[in-house]
Length: 569
Figure 1 (cartoon, rainbow, N blue to C red):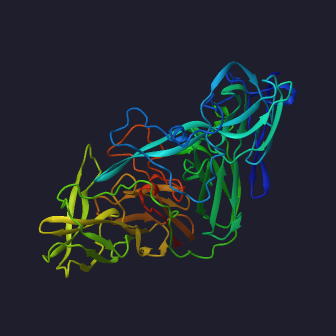
Figure 2: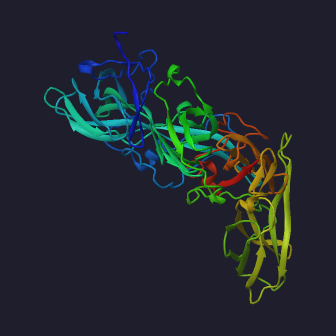
Figure 3: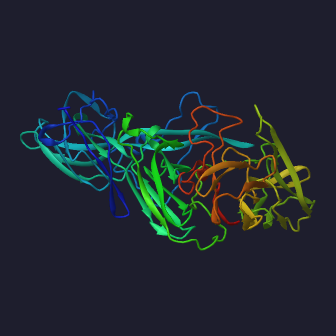
């Protein structure tokens, strides 16, 4: 053990310091600093392989785009799209400009990086020696971009997992002295967790190598409150690769759901609600691919740790009112809407159609205005949707369906009409204007999930009695055809809205002692019928739906729905 150090990771929790023991094996460098060799590494350590570094400055825009954009993996279905991340608020930028690739010196030197690990913002000193004298040196930092894969089709959207690209950015520069030495200081950037390679590059060649490990932190706010209190849990330092890229959240040893940080560069944030009787409740978070990796300290990624925290329920003030928490309002990055007609279109139509609103729940009143109609013949307003199911389906078990919502004649080449959004499937639909058997215009409309009445059949329920949760506007793609259900922060199952035409009635049983009990409904990624390889995080609650969920890039607005009941004897 003489060549190794045993270290403890520290996690910050609401200003207090929780110590989580972790045996981490890292190679010891000179003067107490840790020196990372390009290869091999000490047993038990996990350090990324050297990645592309810089030559004489940052990469050109074209090269930067090529380096930072994830590439399609081999074997994915035709039509698979790499989603461009939407502009989610609060996400840290890249730590620096993208570096151009450089050749590796076969006699690679060692950079002393002190300290060699820490949280974002930790002051870091990099020292190099035996480099070319009186030479400008650029320091590069290895990082990644991570995103989601989907297969958008005219009648559905399939979820195909995640993908990443590895590259380097420039974090600073220095000039060596007459002996070929330099020192550079910087603050550890906000980035994915894990080991980041640092290279000293001179004249297009990477001459020395070190590394810094970004540790994980957990914050929770608040730490006490009555039943139903929203609790924000923030977990930083998640990794960019598959195993350290997800997290699991437990409440009193009950599985709440999954957290990811693909689009948020290693920072996962979710909101759950305080449940259970007054007293102390244990919240646990840690590395996961859907479910908690319980012995992560014995894995090749021993630094991918989590922690526990205590939330104190102060009182039961009765069931809080129902609410709907919508995701971040972002601009979609993929213009792909289901049910857009590819045939039957009037090729040279100059009709321009507009809707007074382009999203809303079933029953929404929408004004339709169109101009440029070539004749005064009646115009049909047609709602385009699909019918079918994914249950026991081995290929495609659905088909297009159209409903005429009304007919009206234009005046002076203009049309002014109104429609009511049908009581049916949620998600992206199309309003088509059909004249003389041709589709002269079509405009997408997004049907949002909604509650029927208060959402529950009865707010007061006897212990052991069944009650119903009633939703409308659940969709049919793998992004939105199911919802995941938590009861008192414990995942109990899911509901599907495809076969029932968007209408979801969940039959639940009132359990637990007398008092308030919570029902939280989250988005879920459906990974069945059809199923694809390498689709993690499927069939579980997505707690980071607000900022890191593939449907956001396609304009879907999938919320968390918050309900509550009072159980009586």
